Image 1: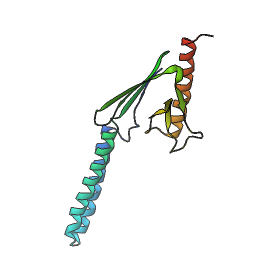
Image 2: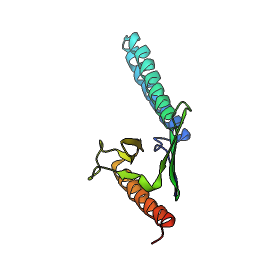
Image 3: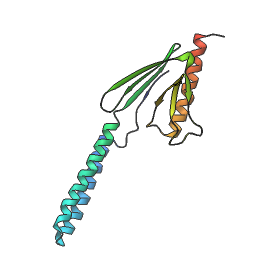
Image 4: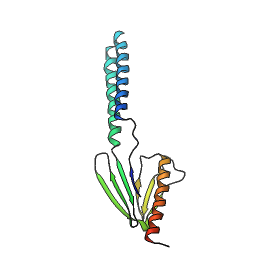
Length: 153
């Protein structure tokens, strides 16, 4: 098994441009209405609101660069994680002694863990509970197949 986990995208780049254009036009028109009534500072505050929304989207997009690669072979489970800033972490767990753990029923606070001894690696924090359950099932099946390959009956 070789799976690459990435966060779900909130908007495409084109969708982002359309949304920001609609927000900017709406806020500008609303600001002009307040300006015509003599409330000059409101136009500036509307501009700050647009800037805050743009900044929130930029933070969201930077976090979407996160990536986790899980590879299951007959000998090991390899974990490669690259965070939003590009820093990488790597771990290898012997497949013979690894466990896949997920609290059932999967909820927002139940994490998917790959455990070995007293050490655990949490993967897929950005996945929905349904996606975590599906991934846990797939990892368990891949681990069983890997063990069967290594230790034929």
